[in-house]
Image (cartoon, rainbow, N blue to C red; front, side, top):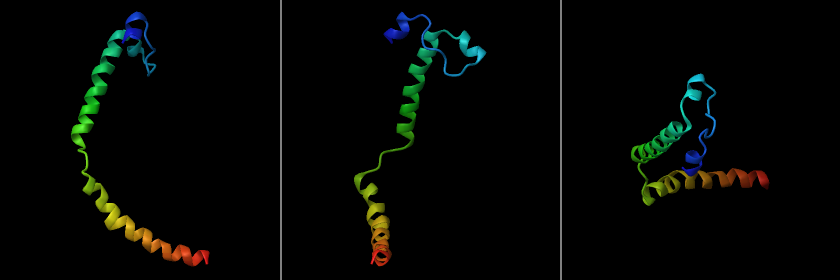
Length: 79
């Protein structure tokens, strides 16, 4: 915030387009300040957090049997 306020030029635009050079740095900064929290809140609302038992279910039901089934061929190759 203070760096953008004290530096009238601000950071150069990400895309080197003619229209982006006409937008002042303070406006670009304001757009970023509004856009990134909006996207963060949107993603948090769209993808809910999983409960602990939901995240442990695939590990217990899928990955544990697969890893135990893989132990037999790997141990056979190493012997």
